[in-house]
Amino acid sequence: MSGTPRRRWRLLNPLDRYVLVEFTRIFGVTAFGFPLLVFVTDLVENLQKYLDLKIPRKDLALSYLYWLPDTMFLVLPAAVLFATVFSVGSFTRYSEITAAKASGISFFRFIRPILFGATLAVGLGLVLGELAPPANTRRMDLLKEKGRSITENERLNFVYASDAGRVYRVGFLDVKAGRLQQLEIERRGAASSPGARRRAPQAVATLIAADEAKYKANRGWVLGKGVAHVIDSDSTNVTVAYDSLWDRRLVETPRELRASDKAPEEMTFRQLGTFIAALERSGADVGPLQVGRMLKIAIPVTCVIIVLFGAPLATSSQRGGAAYGIAVSLGTTIVFLLMTQLTRAIGGKGLVPPDIAAWLPTIAFGIVGLVLMLRVRS
Image (cartoon, rainbow, N blue to C red; front, side, top):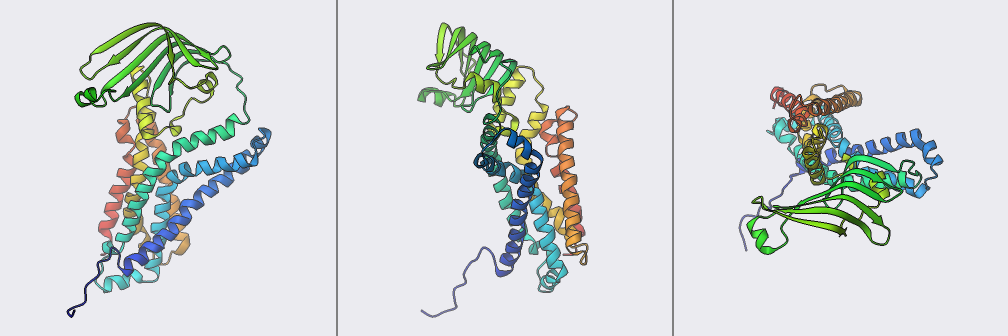
């Protein structure tokens, strides 16, 4: 069969692949190199403590492996910035961008593969943000539960978010006696029957209140004298009073409730939202938690914004070399981290709505990046 040869469609042409490979190489080294630096620093600072706790070397090594998702999540914008500055700086220094412009390829078209790589980094950041909480919990188990005994047997007025999506509000916990007082268990979820799900999906809430609860090692928690509420989407409240109730889903032991109260970094985006909602209903200040929750999205998105900021800076000095790239990258990273801590403060204090405060560093870098991009000769 004769005719003109068929043109094969390719997602990336040779120039795109060349630019993307250079960016990915530096990004990979930085994304894994920064966490290793953090691990070494932590080990040097806390080695004596780990030795005193007699943590096995295997568990200590595993604890750093479980810490990897969290540290990578935090350094992703810095890794993208380093990869952008060093790759674009190298292209500028060796006149490859000038050659591309002479061939009719604009600067914006030239860095398109870098934007593509940064977009993939956003997806990686969102995945790491969900993997990090359970990994952090496991790390805490390896570092704390192995070598630390609980010296306090009581705890007052706390909220605990379980893995099953339920939230416990407890007035008093006595670990030694295995006893809870003023217990409330809340869960929001889907209706159990198909008909109810069709009427009001994800609208049924349950609330169990008990004056006290006792823990039995072979059975779990037995709640004594309380009320159970089932609330539908139309605000219908079905109330059942009971003298004794065995809650099979309350699986946490008294020691776990005392020692393993989850920190925000040990909760996923959804779990943290449930936890915040429960605290809001109890009248607690949730501003810092709301900022931290939104940062789980804002930090990965910053990976794309940082390209708009770093690429023009990398072209501003053709002779700066590695020293210039390191100075720009480190300086920008420090400013970004400081701004992130500042947003936690102003969002937590209510000076700016928490959900908006989390995006302030991204917005600021985006505005500066757009100005710098407009000044680049394309």
